[in-house]
Image (cartoon, rainbow, N blue to C red; front, side, top):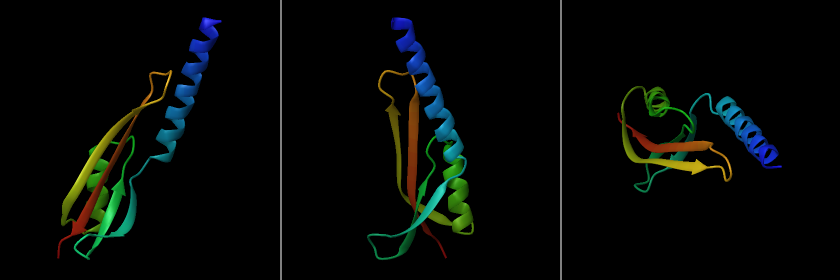
Length: 95
């Protein structure tokens, strides 16, 4: 019975990792209003390297930006050895 539980956890963890990797193949960018009233961008690159966030910021800001907030969280699926890394940052483009 215990080996079935271990195998189930392994399968669930593997499926979750595959789905998340497939969905997070690129950074997601969303326009936001910054506290100073200017336009900024919320960039999310879960499961990816920080370079995906930086590349997205460079692309949306034509290479020039200031990062005002950068976060990284590690979430572990209960009962599995699968950890998902959530990364996001907020940027303001420079003129």
